[in-house]
Image 1 (spheres, helix red, strand yellow):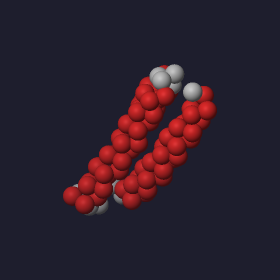
Image 2: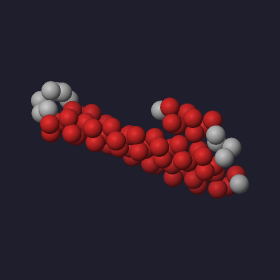
Image 3: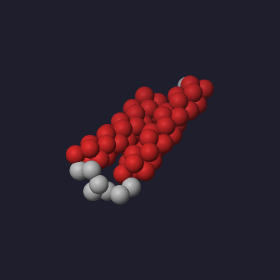
Image 4: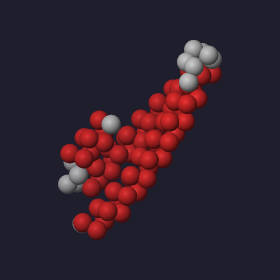
Length: 78
C-alpha cells in the first residue's frame, strides 16, 4: 500500500507513478511466494495459509488491472 501511495504522490510523472505501482505488484508477488515457502517448509503452522495465498493472488490481479487502467488513463492526459 505504501508504494501505491508514494506513486500517487508522483502521479504528475507518469513513469514514476507506474514504477511504484509495479513495485507494489512485485511486493505482493514476493509476499505470496513467502507464504508458499512457509506452507512447504512449515506445513500446518498457519491454518489458513491457502486462503492467504489466494487473497494475495486476487490482490495481485487487482493491482495489475489498476496498472493497466493508469497506463491507459494517463495516455489521454499527456
